[in-house]
Length: 199
Image 1 (cartoon, rainbow, N blue to C red):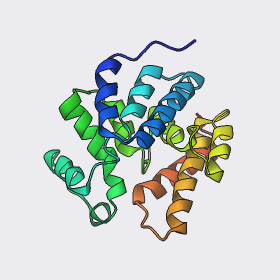
Image 2 (tube, helix red, strand yellow; image 1 turned 45 degrees about the horizontal axis):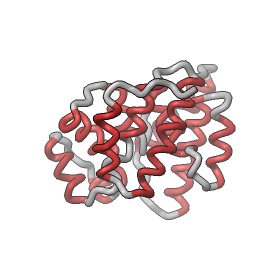
Image 3 (cartoon, rainbow, N blue to C red; image 1 turned 90 degrees about the horizontal axis):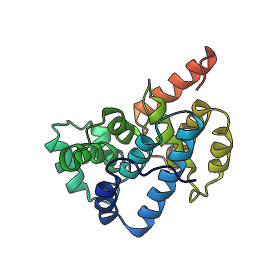
Image 4 (cartoon, rainbow, N blue to C red; image 1 turned 90 degrees about the vertical axis):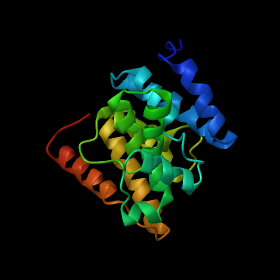
C-alpha cells in the first residue's frame, strides 16, 4: 500500500514538474519512489525523503545564467571549480530556490538537495538516501546501478560509497574535474566502515 502523500506535495509537485523536461521528470519520479523505499527500509522519514527527491533536480535544466543568478541571490561565492563545472551548481541552486520561492524550510531536506551531486563528509542518512536513490532509480541503466541497488538491500552507507565510486569513475573516465567534497565524502565513509560504524 502506498504511503500517504507528504505534507505540501500538492503545492510542490506541479511547480517542479513545470520546470523540467519530460525526461528529467521521469528521472525525478524514479528517484522519489526509490528514496521512499530506502527511507522505509532504513527507518527514516519517508515524506522528507520524497520531498528531497522531488526537489533534487528542479534546477538541473536551468541555463548557467539562471543558476549563477540564483546563487548570487543566495549570497554564495562560487569557487573556480564550481564556475567551470555548471553541473555542480544545480543542487545548491535548487535548495536556495526551494527555500526562497517555495517556502521549504526543512534544513535537512535542503541539505540533501544541496549536496546530492558531490556528497560531503558527515552526510546524514537522509543525504545518503538521496545520493543512493539518484544513482539507483529504475531508469538508471549504467553498469554500477545494479550493484548499488543490491548493496542498498543491506547497507545505506555501503550503497552510498558505491554511488560515490561511480561518480568518481565517471568523472575520471571523461577527464572532468572532481569536487574535493566527493573525495572527502568517500574517505569519510571508508573510515566509518573501517571503524565498525554501519548504517
